[in-house]
Image 1: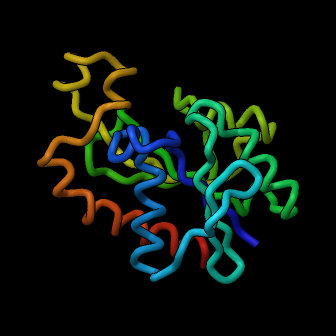
Image 2: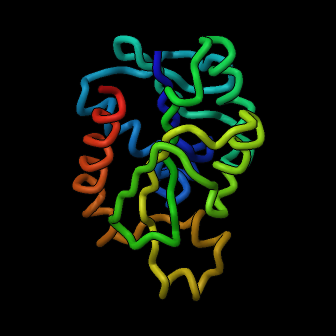
Length: 173
């Protein structure tokens, strides 16, 4: 069994914010796959399953998602090497998608939380570039990650999320 984790913040006010790129990626994946999320959260996350792959959107805030990932890992007896985490990265140019089989948090507080909870960073990750230096300098980092995509960026999301879908499928294979 594999576990795919999309990082984001719970609640409608965070829809289409940069920090919710992981949630957006999984919602796009489910739409393309014609899959549905379960009606009730389980173990602190909205979840769905396609074949032997679990998909979760933790309902803890972004910086505290590690405990939810750990609960799924323990409950379903999933090895760290069978976990894929999808998150935003404001240091990566908007539209770039980078995947690694393991690595460091790179300052991402969601990944730091998961690293601490799992006591390892040996899980795969996909980083979705949300960088926009001009906007980030005007707002500061906290407001930037919680800001919504510009109309121009939003128009490019389907293409970007298609690239993420391909990387999720490669991980599953």
